[in-house]
Length: 218
Image (cartoon, rainbow, N blue to C red):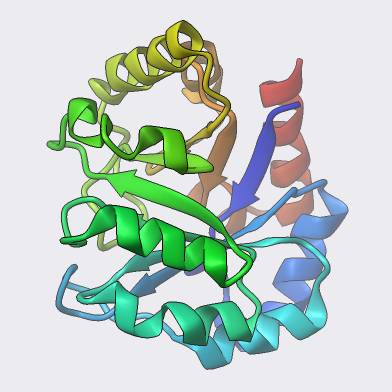
């Protein structure tokens, strides 16, 4: 079963509860939460308090993607706020093994993220420890960017490595995912699809969610 994780970065925050209800009705599997601090990426979003509020209005697991400097300092805060899965960037974390273990100690699943210019081989020493590998298919920081086509090769390489080595982490893709390219992303080996604008910036959020869910599972 492939999973769909709508990114609330693209949602209308004036009525977030309703927006979440609409993606639930469309069959969303997770809620992807992009945490940005204005330093690691040139944008500022929200923190643990918003995660805590979201947790109160949905039973969907919360995918918390930390695009922040020194993420170790806030792991506990996000776990306590209700994060189910916590992702950190390979490019930012100095002691990645320690950070991944800390996330697991906090009773969350652990993911590692790589930016478009980061080769997958840099994860070779940590890959057996993670639950997720998140491939950024745009440069992180803003929603609405176009999918970088070379990401398909990276996704395929990761999927082949996983099969060859008998590993069971899930491959997640974030950035520019839409109904035109989602089948190609699936064929490359993706398991979890993060979609923002292609869900929330449409006339019918529920229908758009259902359409993407159907495309990844047909």
